[in-house]
Image 1 (cartoon, rainbow, N blue to C red):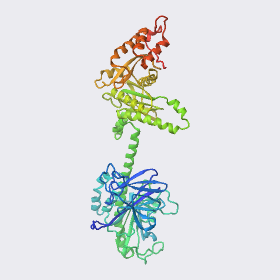
Image 2: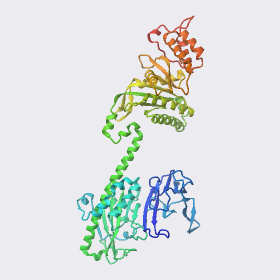
Image 3: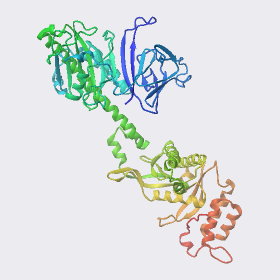
Length: 635
């Protein structure tokens, strides 16, 4: 896994001579083909270095491709940061490695770096980890290890400092906007709780660490300004692997810097490294208990060489550091819990997208959610939208199904997003069709109007994209809720009102109209004061497949695009009444003279031509008076 390592080395400058020296490091995961924003602002940047005040809130864009990182100065006038200063990126001159160049963009290969402000960014891989720790040159003079349960039984001897640091935890956890922010904030807490620690970091054994090797990556670190660690934070790989991989428990090591001391394996101890003369380095590594191969690593020094401390002094050091070990274990437990809650929150966020927006308020109330999902009879308004020509297009594009699906997906997204925008619930996709409904889990004001407005909006959007569709709208009592088999239950509808929406939509082809609605929908629109732009005109009683009785059908339209002039409404209603009452000769004449090119008029005339009888005068079939209904005839 490629990562961008960021080491921020803060030093006093001429402008800021009193700034305390400090060092912070972190690693950012890189994904091919994705662009990341880099800057100081943790809340808005993908990669943030908040400690470096020489980095602007939004500084550069970073991308990763073909094992190279591309860094480019941020756009001249980003919309969120209109007054941002001109940024510069520093890189090594490839012709003279001791010289540096100011650039606006650069490609960085594995192990190569670029600099922004006081931060060095280096492209790393799992096999490219930090420097070897000098303390790994010998065995530890004292090693202690304890489980979480054992540390919980140990009482704090002086809890004041720890409690003072812990007071920050609620705000610390709330302030963490991501995993990086949580690690950074928790390291600050641990450094305050453990005043004798020089550095703290989150370390990780790479997932593909080869057998026999001790690779270790520093994910995040915080070095105290007074630590003077010279080469920077270099945790013991031997200790980390023992704690994380071998023992899986908190381990404490103390090393001797006196060359005259010998370890338990009769190996000479290392000569005192820089800054550790007459001192004993120590470190605690406490692994996360979630099998992530992460650990919290804390290191420091105590005065005096280990051998010179004597048995009582050594025991006191270990007892004091055991208190630190307990604190580290406590922080690790809090980090684990917070990460678990954050992952659950992300998981819920992802799952939420698969649930209807109407259910989002209940996601944090499982008992209430279970009640809402329980199937029940509801008065709902149903919208069914189906694309035209889908079946033939599938066959024509069988050699490029992916490309064909992109167009279908665009249409489905248009339908579903419009439904959601109008407060509806998308029940699901039926091939190239969408079933949606309003009035669940609770009735809505003007839900019929909202459904019809969504229908017109879908029609307009798809028409603008060069697509055609048909829409059926119904209203009535329906079983709604979590329906299906025991291992695959989804929010869905069941009832004749649902089937009727399918049937009415299919009739739009014969009538040549965009949308057809049922009688209850037409009645509610007529009675609604808010539906002034919405109109219906009756098409007579139709025979819907699967329905024993005739169903009144109405064309649904908007005054923005009426099928006939408003002054013709009476004539149209009169012609349809004549047709229904059996006066087919009068109906045919009126439809042909007043509405010759109207698609619905043409459909009714096709029905009369097909079913009509009589030599001198057009008459309906002999059994017409029994049902006064018909099956629409397509052209």
